[in-house]
Image 1: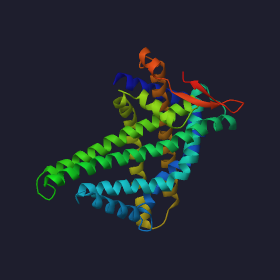
Image 2 (image 1 turned 180 degrees about the vertical axis):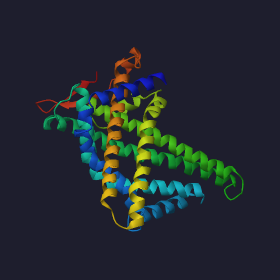
Image 3 (image 1 turned 45 degrees about the vertical axis):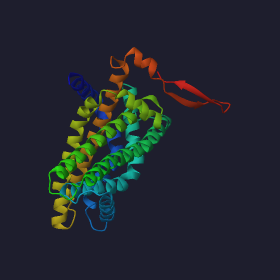
Image 4 (image 1 turned 180 degrees about the horizontal axis):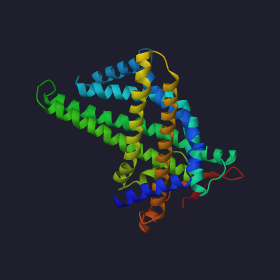
Length: 324
């Protein structure tokens, strides 16, 4: 807990130290992504969106897998459908503006006194590994969801074999709640691993599945710390999304038009969302630095952990470069 608080204080100090840079270039780069996230919350519930189709497909899949028709799984189905629809809507902004904003933040953290916007070549060298890692992160998130649903399918199949599936006992309710908790734990661990992999690939300049493997190694035994560090920013982002719903989406649905004052307030909320995305990236990078430098990786682990990134030499042959 004490180390986590130090990382949070160090991250806040780094943000305030370079306040003018972080609130200008990275914030405006992340603004289109933030706006797309907030607007997707307004467009997702509409009947013409992809949400009803995805919801019905998942409900059919849950019924075929033998999941009980309970209110808990209805809410879970709705949340997963909203997440999938929002991810599809924001994907172009994620692959461009969000990753470029993260590249500019990591460039600033690597160069302790950012005064000018980073050059195109430096941004390109950071963007490529971030893009490769993000693509593999998507596969990791899909695998985590499939694993959680697979465990729930096995649990309900076992209950059905025992003959308790159609009984009014509390076993079904207990299994449903346990399945929802298991789903949340697996997804939370996958998300913090993805955040660490992105920070690692930007700081070291190497991306892809090897960055995820190294992130898993760095987080070994320290997942609770990663979850604690991710909690404040994610709570703040959820609060900003709720504020956008209350101050922008609700008045729009009531009045039927977007008034100028409401639109300006929405722009400010989207900018505030961008600021917390920057803070989240800084926290991830500071957490990576604390794991890398210090006292967290012992000598035995340094000898055991040898992941090599392939590099192509000038003759076209593949060489290897050991990580520091």
